[in-house]
Length: 307
Image (cartoon, rainbow, N blue to C red; front, side, top):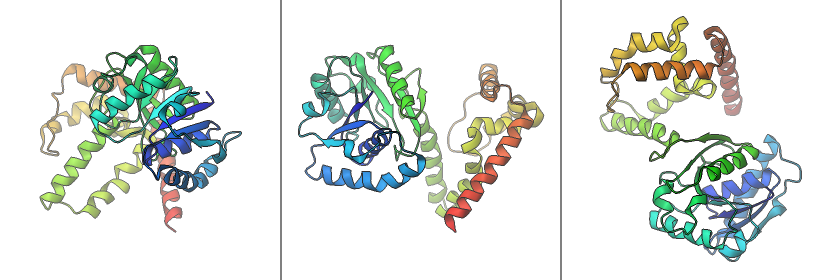
């Protein structure tokens, strides 16, 4: 795909614009705010040094950005549409319906929503089968993850088209099998956020202590293996199976205000098999060696960045 329409040019929409431009695409942006173009071009200018350091695609240029005067003009030649309007459900419903009305019928339309399900957003569209969620993380031009999921009226091929498109731009894509409010990463972030607020409110920890507990603790391991594979290593040679069998009872301990699920055999086996599948043949020793090398590299990078 060579031409992308970005509807909404705020922080997220502007981040998408910068990302697509860096991948050598032509971007047509539309935003009703009177100062939208000025802010958008300033955002792209600010992002460009980082994108240049990461590596620009052939023909990547800020000159490939044009600003449309109308929504119809923005989507007229689009091969993919990325909507990034404010998180207001009625606004999303109407805007997606309006985009659907003026966009060529074969084009997939994706929403950057951070919490709404597509099922509740696609209700006013005449062609809801091509509407999907393409949930990015801020800033979209640096953070690779995109969560993709359709609504009840979305055709499977639209979800697959969106996922393929994002992968083609260098994104890491999670295709969700079902809608969950907040998707995956936001739910995990939200759980930590709420527990942090409880600890501050109760005088159990300071803001600095909470941040330090992650940046100099488990946060160093997560870029390498994520939280579940990290616990897989905590089980030693027995892996996740030993971890769950040994520490499973601690799920009943008051270590969080969240209620823990019952550790049924099905849940245990699902987590164990999931870790083995993710390890993909790598032994515990292999994973430990990979983790240690990566953590050293991360610590050095952080130290050098603070120097």
